Image 1 (spheres, helix red, strand yellow):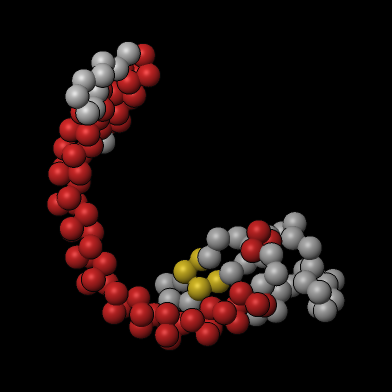
Image 2 (cartoon, rainbow, N blue to C red):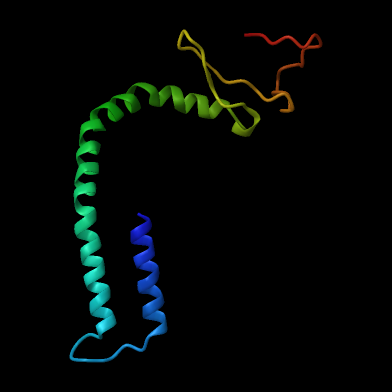
Length: 121
């Protein structure tokens, strides 16, 4: 990837700094750019085909997940007003997932703050 970036940068500098010589049809710089991008596409083609195959393989699993978890995630999104008030999720050894509110987060509306500092679970 660094090689492609370096070549693209060099091509860009050469294009902006050089005077293109007009020939029949296209300039030498335009022809060089076409050849460069054609070669880049040929290099990228196997990776793109592999990515397409991977997408086809995981599509049924993603559809199933969306059908089963979609309604629950939609309900969760409606209940949580501000995601920045929560710590990152914690997965317990038994598979439970905890969403902890940050210590400095404002109290939830409709719930009185507990004086003893305990949290109801």
